Image (cartoon, rainbow, N blue to C red; front, side, top):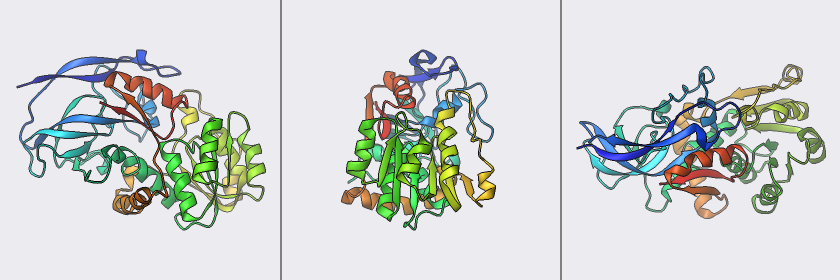
Length: 342
């Protein structure tokens, strides 16, 4: 028998800054699970910068499609508890992840590959692990951080690595892993508090607030001999500064371009330096590197449990706060992984 539940729907595509007015929370009837399906009561749902790219009439080619107006969001990772199951391998009470977040309940098909495997429903081991970690360091966020270092050939350590948005969900993990791997890490973030955390607690070699100091000048000060690797979460003037600072044969992991998400894109004016310096610029998505998931969970999970890597969270309470959480995250008002607890 169908039961009422709530979900967030997109009602309009924002031009400029996203806000709660672009969403509404609606009540819907959730059906009983059919054969091969599981009913999940969602407990934690993710809030990620990439959602902004789907809040457009046309999402970037090759990325996930735009969110349709007047429908529940898909491709938003979430964690929940199975409350009814007609699928082998999933029992009532199991904690699972799946890609139907920003809603209180979801009916999920078992065994169906979703989001290149990153969203395929699976049972999670929460015996000694907080369940929300699977939306952060032990899930897609951790995989993105780890695979970005992998594609930039930076898992070996011993180089100078610049990480932008280094207090965010992905960047904070990259910065900490970089220090743990033995890199000389330069970090940038959007507030004095975030910079202090990066220097005092993470132990980066240097950090700067990009609101107070231009990236190009900061790199001249903090890495006068240049950098070997740049982990790019920002794009725009950050990528331009990195191209100037990179040494011959330097590498860039192109993870995101958050500076362009709510404004007019501004590409680097010095892109020819990629040719002149024999640079390697590697675009990547964590969901296309599922072969690294077990390795990442083992390695990063060990660091988390021994305390050499920490996980920061900004948590909002209640489904109604999901749009506010997205707005705050895109405006730089959150630290670490942004989550909504349902």
